[in-house]
Length: 310
Image 1: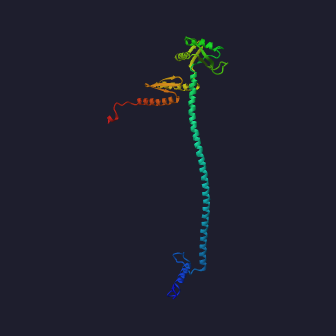
Image 2 (image 1 turned 90 degrees about the vertical axis):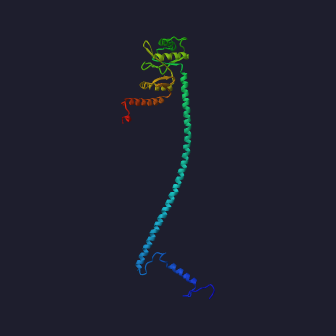
Image 3 (image 1 turned 45 degrees about the vertical axis):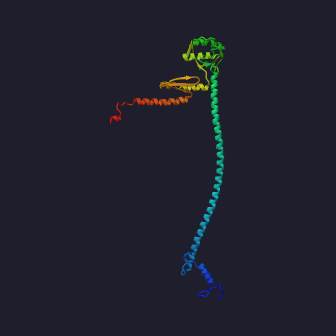
């Protein structure tokens, strides 16, 4: 027997040829575990044809489903790509918005500092205007045209008579004029006269006398004198004076000092207010405290505590 060749005991064929034949047979006829069941040998041709048609239909249905899934995946991929582009655009827009917000915050911060600076400058201008008016005396009640052409001579003659004071040296004015347009018809309240005294001491004497006497009368004239302030200061003084009735009701001692400072005293405690809103807040709290004390005082007084009675 030639070397390297073996033969089967039954057929006498080489072993390699047997293995190849066995593999070919298993490929043509797979086992029951690895392949779906084939039609029985006794099935008719019509039954086998119907079975094959059903299998082909199922394969066609699966193919259509796979095709639909492929189309859906293509659409989903396109939509995902579009969403990525939109997201990239949104990120770019958000980056631009962040930069704009940062710029606006910087501007707002600078505006806040500028507003504080403007407020400080406005308060300084108001203070300078009030200081420039320290020698002014505001005269209310003089009829229109009563002063004639020589307002200095008229005031030098009428003011000592109204106040009953003797001025040494005589009253001297730096300037004097009426505020507002002249009223020719005589209707309405006459415009006030602003008299700027040359000497600050004389202005203080007139204002002190006006604070003591209040109203000056001479014949048909009823004259009031007051200090001259800027509009901002005058508005604050007016706001402070609007609390006079409430201060009296709460039995609070108060006084309004120049230029616009409200001083109050309650239960031996004194406070100064420069802003009317701060005074409003304080009085609201004081009123609530007063109402609480009044309600407590109206409660029936018990001579024995509840714990002792038990």
